[in-house]
Image (tube, rainbow, N blue to C red; front, side, top):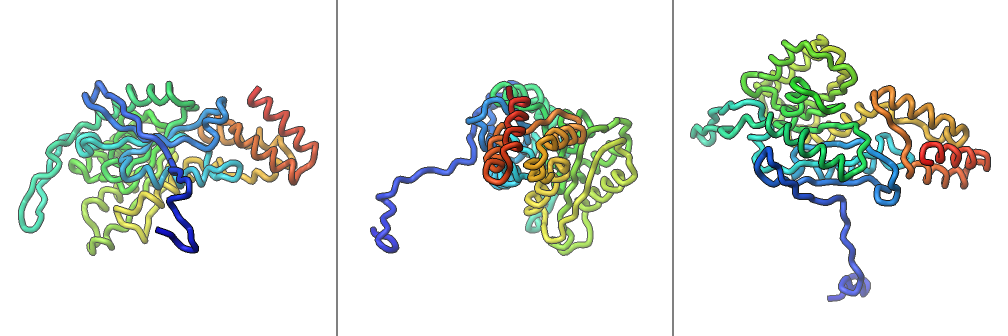
Length: 336
């Protein structure tokens, strides 16, 4: 069949567009095989010395495709507002089991009939051990991580993120999108109220959807619990935690992860944003910027090899020979 203007698609060589890979990982702790979805930053295969932060994402099926694309766009060197990163998403096998912290079933009514929900709940402790003791070592061995870790969760995934923050925080930063903080009679609210931990150098972003409007109700247990948790943040109950809250008037529970993750990542990496064009005039500003970024995140960060390649190319077009020489000298300092 001939297409428009005589174009024949069958005669054109076609090539798949790939945004990542799926890796099977056998878990002894969970006694099952898990699917890990990984998206690598631009230049990862070409430049072998650069190390990257890792963004761990729950509910891979719902979040991997859009978030990997958005993240790559916002971290595009040298104009990006986020640092380049490796995205690692975990696909579900039993979502309720893995993402809920306690055994807590619930009676709900559907079409006039009562049904017991969440009977297979309460496996989050074991799931987080899988992440810490099996997934972390696997990623650290297979990929070039710089050790900075972010956890992104939505709904039950947001509940899991908050639970890890309050129980045993082994991430540097967290994003909880419309988390199910109503779980088990507001267990997370109670944990936060009684917390005596110091959350220094941890960042946390809480996104809330406009569910009351979507469900045509003023408030329900979901909104009430998030409101209580937000009040505790405002009262600084979580000592030294660096946090921010966002309410999304035009989004409901199902759509809030997209704007929430965008704003949450920008909050976590807010010191990554800078006017790199000034570095074409004064390359020493690169050193200052990455020192400031490392100080803000309490973790060592440095420019990528791709950053230098692209910045030097721009300097050759728009800058001076002196700037090019200074940039090349600085490049050798970071990457001998």
